[in-house]
Length: 163
Image (cartoon, rainbow, N blue to C red):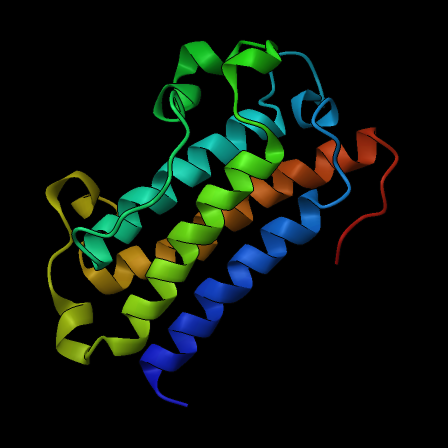
């Protein structure tokens, strides 16, 4: 398996991990906070969905993703304090964005060369992901950090621990 095939598989597996962790959440549970002031899944997944859309745009400029109105505003610090379900897309809407972005990411990574991975990432990412390769690797590691937080919500809801 080549490097780009391996990375594409990891990016695809990332989406499956997210869907597995959230599969049994209702839209009401989507707004559960494990403790006061902690982020609920709706905020965390809006944040990840926005990041996934940005990365898809870097890897495949001009790619089109159906993003619900207001998704970008859902990841702000102000939105993180809100428990209003009207302020956030539903779980299904958010996962649809993530699925579209993931498909674009996977397709792009499969065609990339070592030289492509070595190119500098856009300036906004460069301090923590200096190259496109680093940016691709950030997709699953960023999600894994948030999935750890989702595990705490799962425990609060009495759901089985995943993995």
